[in-house]
Length: 86
Image 1 (cartoon, rainbow, N blue to C red):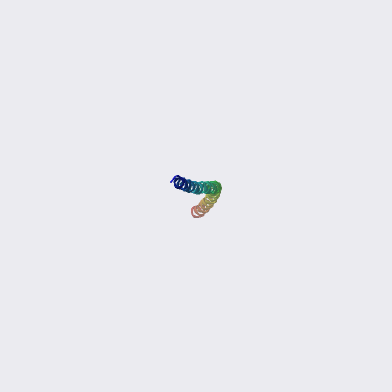
Image 2 (image 1 turned 90 degrees about the vertical axis):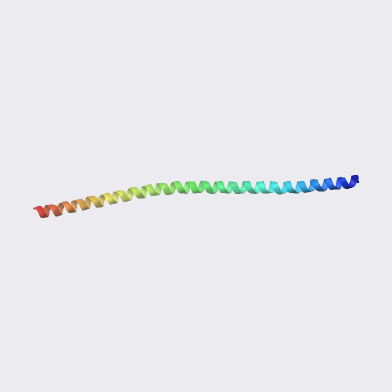
């Protein structure tokens, strides 16, 4: 009876040890995945900053291009008015 109890207890301990090993493996795997996710988030943040900078430069470029077109259009209209009036 005592031997049987000892075997049952040992079996329970072995089961708990196996469960704990699985849990430790899962925690280590989770830590690795979190680390990879953190790296990807950093890369995404860097890409977003670069995109924002490029978008601002592009916006400024097209603003100047639009301004030049408006000036050219204004000059053409002024020339046409001078021709009509003159």
